[in-house]
Image (cartoon, rainbow, N blue to C red; front, side, top):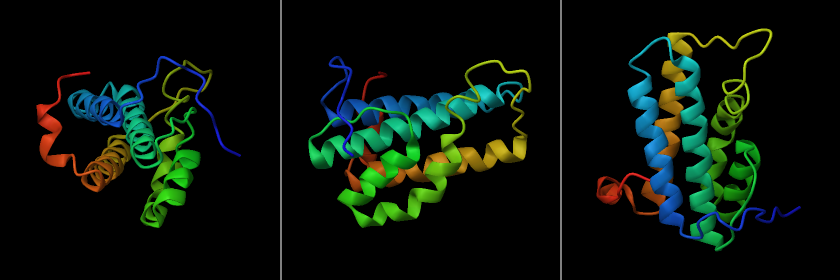
Length: 146
């Protein structure tokens, strides 16, 4: 099944997606300094991974994709480059922070500082893997904030 884009206003420039992912990565880094904002930090980590994967898919296939499921996005990246297979576990782990961290629930999501450290590390490794693969790492700080 191929997902088609449903939002015609989404950028068709892959660098815009990487730039937005970088903003989420930097936001997560800043938020992580306040241990009362672990959920918000985890959400930005999920968003960073989502936007980085969408940027990669757009760069390599020239197709925009819709959706938030990181495992599906990572599988799509694997179909373009088998080396993304190594990120399937991380994408599944980060996937849970899209909904659980955004909305209040009867049983609040609690993310320990140790868990958050792991989330941040996974996000950083995945983001820079995508940026390196697209040869954008050296230009990230030249992008304007999205």
